[in-house]
Structures are given as C-alpha cells and as structure tokens.
Length: 252
Image (cartoon, rainbow, N blue to C red; front, side, top):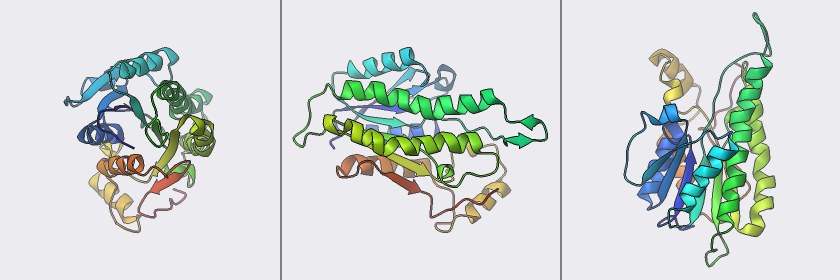
C-alpha cells in the first residue's frame, strides 16, 4: 500500500511504540496524526509531518473529532496504528485482597475497547475514500502482546485485554474486507519503551537474558519497521505476528 501523500493515525503517539511508528510513517511520506492524552503530549517530540491530537481512545467524541481532523488533511486516510495502552500488575488474589474490579475494567477499557473504538471510527472514514487500483483503501495495525499467549503472574487484566485484541484480528479483517481494509496485529515481546525506564540495568539484563535470540530487548523502531513492512505487503491480512525473539514468557 502506498503511504506517501496519505494520512495516518497513530494512538499512543507521544512516546514509545507510537512515537517510533509516527516517525517511520513520516519518513515514508505520510501525514501523521498522533493521538494521546493531553498530559502526554506536553513532552512529545515536535517533528514536521506529525500533528498531535489530544484524544482519549476510550472517548467516542474525542476519537471521532480526531478522525475528522485527519480526514480534513486533504490526503486520504489510509493507515491506523493502535499503540495506546496501559499495563498495571495485580494478582487475582493477593495479600491485600482480591483484584480491584475497577482496575480490571480500566485495563480492558483502554487496551481493548479503546482499540476497537479507534478502529471502528477510523474504518468508517477510510471506507469513504477512493480505493487504489487493487481495491485497497487502508490498513489497521493493532498492538497485542506476548502476554496474550503467555500471561504471567499479575498480568490477568493485561493478558485478558491483549487476548481480546488478538481475538479482534481475524473477525475484523473479515468484517472490513469488503471495504478494502486490512487488519493486522503485532504482539511484541519485551520492548525497551518508557515503561521500562524506571527499572534497574541489572533487571533489564535479566529480562534480555531470557530472550533466545537476539539476547536483548526489542526496540520501538523495530516495531515501527514491522508496521511499514505490513503496509507494503498487501497480502498480509487477518494475522497476528509475534515480534519477540522467540521468547515464551515464564510464569513469573
């Protein structure tokens, strides 16, 4: 799919996987609309080609307004990459009692419902664009996690939400096929994002040692590289790609 002179939406675009993806799409000639919470946008890197949009992915109104901003860019909206997410850790039952229902609900709301919310509203806009010579109108790339398959102790909410994203993949691809919209999901392993910035170098080395090969943490730019590869490979659709160095997570 051609990315030059098209519009792209990237959620969680102020940092981590989203920021790397936004930069990669701009390098391909796309106009990027990076959605994130207003407080997150305060420290976002300012680059030509990236327009930051304050939007909570769980809000119909804010996402709808953001999508319309992208539509109004003057170039067709073709790409949506859902990177926004949260990952608190909590056991179903711990020393402090049972897992808070509100916390579980919040993780599902952001990671799964937020992904669906952006996808459904963006797909409506993409479906109104003119198809290319192959009948293709666009691509949605969602972000799951290896936790969807290898959920660890304390990841019950996170693993459930990412398992839901995996479950969205094939059904969504089939739903949107008649509109010429592909849907793919990336399931990253342990990626060196700001979420890991607070842990010690010793702990980071331990995490890297558990990866079969390459024995290191993944990089956000590698996620972004995979997004570009998926966009360029028109026959990829309805599939989940693990990006994890063949890592299979231990129970803890």
